[in-house]
Image 1 (cartoon, rainbow, N blue to C red):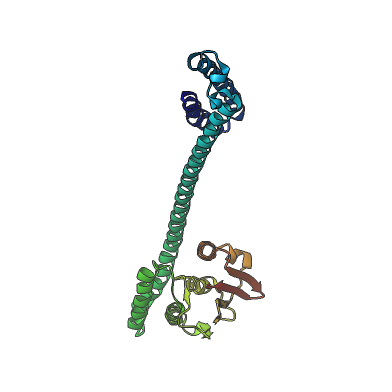
Image 2 (image 1 turned 45 degrees about the vertical axis):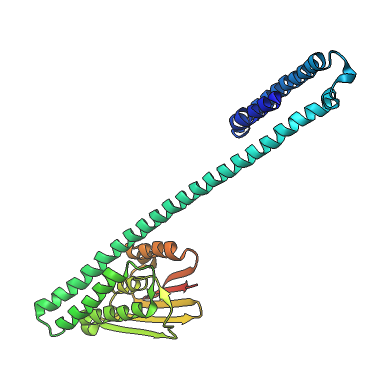
Length: 302
């Protein structure tokens, strides 16, 4: 019994944690061999003293179990192996739990970084959108135009959406449409007769949701980078939903190169937001055809 206990303790508290778990296999093999030799020698000594003190050197008087050295050794090492197996299982479960905790912390950290990056991108959109609209309102106020109160009302609606709805992960697509319409109306007041715009949408489900301020920056970008062709800025927007997809198309007159517009800060920010929010569940195509700049966005909502 003392040999069994000593050998088991050496195995579970020294050999396994210090060598086997740490993948020091050569040291584990060498020290395991030493343990086997020493414990085997002690087993032989214990049997020898059993022969002396218990059987008075009479082999036939020894206990049948004690006189069989193979049986004794098998019993000792069987206990050692079983206990060591439980120790290995316990260490494995402990390491698995630690690994899961570490993976959870890594995922939480990555999620926080993604949220911070997303918030940073949103903050870049807010001032850009707000300053453009305030400049328009300022111009109307200087002229004391009759449209100024209506502009203030629409701007108020947009600011409410901008400040309070933007923090939500998703909003109704119909809300995004309403604010796109408000923004277009504001731009119509600014462009007067130099704007030819069309916003058509159909088959819009009342339950379809989308990330807030995802489509509006495309519209703003078209007004910002669009060019007057023959004295008119042309803007054509269509929006449809099909089962679990949203298709958004916007075309505006532009004399700039597609690569210049595509590499702008506004579109780059939108692409990053799409990568974070929709991963691979979207398709964004940007192209230039003569004097028309095209953007096509397809989102998978489920």
